[in-house]
Amino acid sequence: MECGTGFVESMVNQVISKRFCKKQQMAWMQLGVHLLLQIRTRVLNGDWEAICRAWYPGFRVAPQPVAA
Image 1 (cartoon, rainbow, N blue to C red):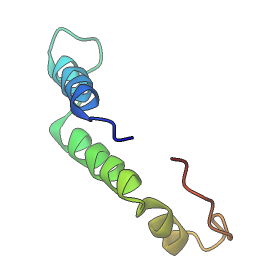
Image 2 (image 1 turned 120 degrees about the vertical axis):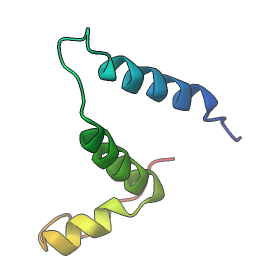
Image 3 (image 1 turned 180 degrees about the horizontal axis):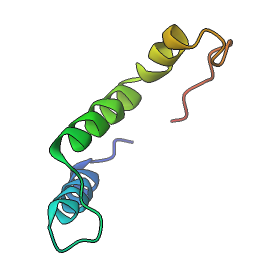
């Protein structure tokens, strides 16, 4: 079964746009959002664990199965 990502993308856009609003107590800078989205993309693509293992050799010595 395939699940659409439109709802999730819409929620992410709402959260990001709300955080950029100056009326919020805490706001994100563009660089912070950019870096966060890069990490999230790598997590979703399955690349993040390999990057962590390259930086930290003791990180999860045995690869963990990816949850569906």
